[in-house]
Image (cartoon, helix red, strand yellow):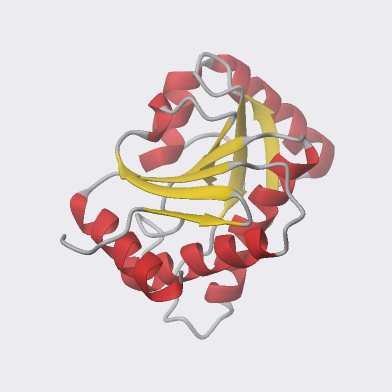
Length: 186
């Protein structure tokens, strides 16, 4: 992993890449790679709901009863419940169907909409998992390119309260893909 940057600064915002458990992050918000029902599930989604407790699910149920299922590429915010983060931003990434059905655009939208939620609440820090690269089947290297590219593009616009963005990646393979994407894009 020599010469793999794990941190850059864009318009005064630090962008970090770490390997770890997103449920333990102390950023103002963590992002949940949710499904459209917002009722919890496997992977990151299940881990966040378990660690955060029933308050998160209760707010998710209220959101769904008000506006229906969350469309792919959109994001909503709830309490962080028992998590160290004050808020959870739930976003729905695309299921991979080969890459020709709008998946890159929908994935970029999931990151962008999450950043807009954080900025709208004037938050200073946010942690992201690798959205859609688990059971939704998005290839990790391509997903990392979209993730890093869309976050950097958002930060370059310079209209955010955020001072820190962290990608919290569960395993070494995903971490390496994000470090490589950061080197290429930043």
